[in-house]
Image (tube, rainbow over all chains, first blue to last red; front, side, top):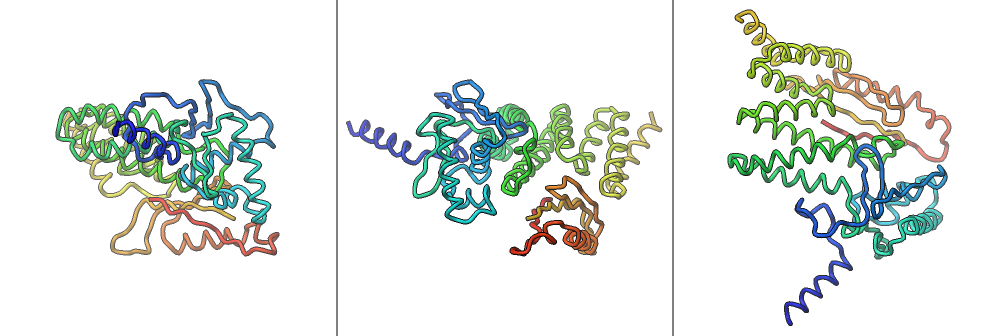
Length: 287
Length: 70
């Protein structure tokens, strides 16, 4: 009896204060949330497996409100913060009214009462009802960090490989990359990009250490898609190709690095990159 | 408001002024390289001078916003 009461109490608490998607483990859910929101690259929304679309440009604001809510954390974001982000040139009261109308339209679009929770003027996207790719990305990358700390265990390495692959799948491209740029997008966009690049360098090092060259190369190549002037990525890639005997690819990578640094930063590769290049030349001559 | 992202790719440990990076203009989707902090400062100053919002806006003093990324 006590257990049932407690469990009902917890259920009620969950309904009132849903746990944010940010903090949860990347475990499989027992139920599939009815709403799916993609923001990494294309912006797409589905409800019950059907796309939710707005065709007229002037009616785009409800989606912008949803995007801003996600960009600003998704949980208990103050309506004033959202209104200031979306209508920066509108006065306080008018902006609040516009916020209320836009939220009403957004709710009507989905037709799910509990999807957007407004308490004390703070708006939450209910993580029990919505799957958001950036939340999944953050959960997965946090899990990867914990796995990297125990990367000497072969079982952990297998998990790392799986979750790392999931990260690359989730990160199609930068947050809301195809949308018109807004200042409120930038912080999350840069944070996710930076986190993925950090993961690529950390996980790549682990794969190199275990002579899992293909895994390391795949990660570094993905890293260069995100950051074409990341010299450390080029250096690591050169080492991977060199140590697997693929000298031609190693040399190509060096030249690609030199071209990119010259074109985008007007600089030469660093001494360390040139030293790697020399090691390639020595091996090419010897062979 | 104008938004810029400063990406720093290389630092000279012996000379803190020598920093290689790019200044990205978010709205214009352009980027310019710099090799030291003076050049970065000059690039930002030139943006302020050429910014259309500066000349048309009379009620607010708009300043560029910087997001630092490394």
